[in-house]
Structure formats: C-alpha cells, structure tokens
Image (cartoon, rainbow, N blue to C red; front, side, top):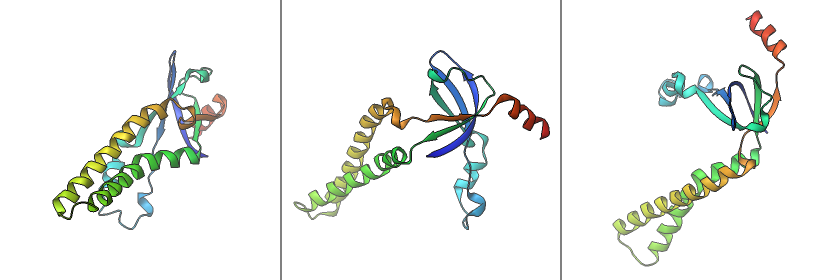
Length: 155
C-alpha cells in the first residue's frame, strides 16, 4: 500500500476534498543542481495535490489530518497504461511498417501514428478506469483531532 498524509479541506455532498503535499527526493539526487524538476518542486502549486474522496467518508471535518492509500498493483497498472502502452503501440507500428516499407520517413510517420494511437487508447480507458474504485485513493486512517491540536500547539 502506497500511503500519503493529508489534511481535509472541505466536505461536500458528493466529495471530501483532501490536500496532500508531494514529497521531493531532490536533496538526495546527484543531479539536483542541474535539474528542472527541482525548480518545479520548489513552487507551492506543484507541491500541493487535491484529492477527492467519496462522500462515504462524511464523518470527516475540515482540518482533520488523514492518511490516504492506494494499492501498489493499481498504481503499477496505471503507470503501465499511461507510459508503457503508448510506447508499445509505437514499437508495434514501426515493426509493422518495416515489414512493408524501408523509407525512414514512413517509419517515423508510423512511430508517430502508433504513439498517438496508444495515447488515444489511454485516454479512452482512463475514463473507464476512473470509475473503478480500485484506482481511487482510500482513507486509511484519521488522526484524532485532540492529538493533532496538541501537536500543532507544540510546533
């Protein structure tokens, strides 16, 4: 289970909105001085992520500290779908085109068409996968309000 801590922002009729902070590993990376990712991670908009939970978690109140989680298998399926499927489609298109054509421009066109087609498949299946509950973040635990208030007073 991949977990992330967050804070409840709002409770609505259909959703509970939780804000999490992206953690960066830039401090441990050797390329941290020449990487654009570090500059993006320094901006506040990049580090804050808002997640909608189903309204079944309606017993939460704004300001509650929570822990969210998603199964590793669901995460890996999503990563393969988003990144692997377009690349596999591109390679299949190039290999298929190479059976009939030898010109480089045709193979490059086939690669682009395969990449776009793979991206289209991702777009179509992602909307169906969003409805599947196994690909959504789930509430793992909720910190007790008194403990959170005590910890905030100590800071």
